[in-house]
View 1 (cartoon, each protein chain N blue to C red):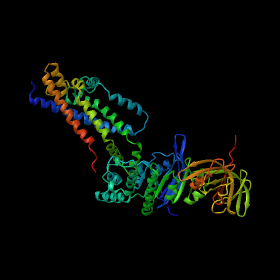
View 2: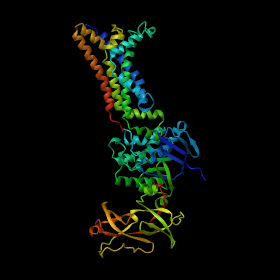
View 3: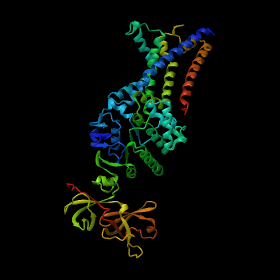
View 4: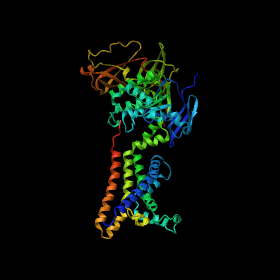
Length: 379
Length: 218
């Protein structure tokens, strides 16, 4: 196996008595984009600082570049000239856009001609050529972040480290910039570590995803695996499994696991984990996977278009809450446990969507994901 | 007018020499010291900051007294024979201006986004490139610090009088000369010297303001 470009080994960083980061092993291969996702305070920024060799002191462990351990004091400058970091805020200097983009190249002592070439190239690639003479103070948030990205790309780093670069931007600006970044990363093939708390960004940009919570790596895998098969409750939460319901395994039937959830028995396509009868589990579901139909004694409200066959679970409950989201509504249905479905506007306009009405909810057996439930010792 | 032109020129020139030297020395020490204080966390930093802040308000006469005591012929530095020389004035003015420049540098650097430092390091800045860029970013408040330091020394009279002695043709500067002429009742001469002093303050501060307010060229 080839040596990973970047590697953290047995790293521990504490702030006071709190362990901010504890990573036994994390490797970034050349040309890959590693997305790091986690809630606030999970240690994402600390991880990025560790990868940028910006932590003066770690409590334990080391950062390896092409297999060679790095020392903050001795290798700091040389290493940081191989990488480029982009932070959440653009952190531009009070100078023109061009001077900002040229900054990293000037630090590296490149020739005037080379600086001009490279800065122009990246100004153009990020679509901010027309702003080159503008003062950085006059830029909008999105423009400033483009300058910050151009400044990082312009040094053509071996590793690009991005710390939630889009989280301060409005949704359309962010979407456009994520799209552009995806294009740039796939053409430049720069090894990238991208920290975010936005799962959509992680899914779009990451070749692999690291889920971080409470300073520890919870799961590290391909995006599709992390999103469909989170290994624990923390990951399930982060990747958008909004419903995490305690359940008990009943047994196998027709190649599917039968699971007891409150008074209901639901079928779940068993994953890779072997289960035994009577074992406690958690059933994880996304609102996107819950189909909703009103009953309320009205003939017009039938089941969803695809008729729920063998592999569908059908539960009945009462509408417990409705939250408008614009084009859609989040509808909470109480089936003995809460299920949340996303419901389109027409159903609402037809007048069926009322708190207290009876409703049918369906979900496919393969939409539900099972994870182990560790019984908490109750006091 | 009781002054010869030549003498007025000499006084003006000496004033400029002394204040420039004192300001320059204060900058050389005060800006790095202030930057270090702003960027470094260490035990005793608060105490040092309190000292600097007190120093910003040092009464010139007290400074004059202490520098006098140090430089007096029988004092610890008496063997250097500096008392009643222009160098003595420079020393006293340095003691007055240095804390002002240090203190204002601390606040100038502290005003910068603390994450800017990480960003610059993350872009491959060496230590000196980092400092240079931070100073560039803080150039407005730093030039204000220079102006405050220069203003503190050019207008200062008590310490210059005490350690310089207002010796004619040797340590007489515009402020001490103005005091002398006023005390003798030569208001016209005092007025002329005062105007000259104002002019010097204005020219230098005008240049610094121009530098400060210049928009960065692109």
